[in-house]
Length: 162
Image 1: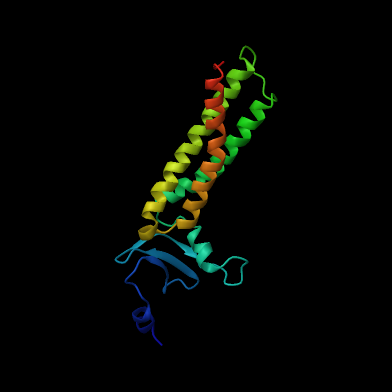
Image 2: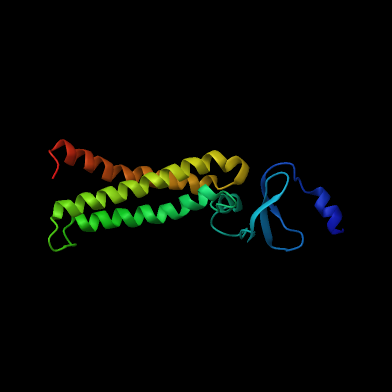
């Protein structure tokens, strides 16, 4: 069987991950008319997660999903930062503890907000560009970890602020 006959048997009408015939073991995102993004190694068929889940966790050519994936790490890091600051482990000379806490809460809320927006944009583009699972995960992380600092800021504001 020649490469031409294999190429003809592949369904290239819809967007999705397609095997690269010139690079066995690799696949690339096909948008229905052109190759996008960079090639990735095909998922291991014997992994704990299915190949479809492994593919959907890749942002592929979906730039917003790539930003959302980095946003997951940034949201978790900012949540840890705000927790450490709020516990009183961080002391800055001349700055009150409550001011540091509110600053850390604001940073955490902003990072989670940016991650949430990137995730929403990524979900919108996912049918054409992939990355649905990573965008969904990022949206969940941004809501769960981003809601805490926002609620604390609202509570501080209702209690009279600093």
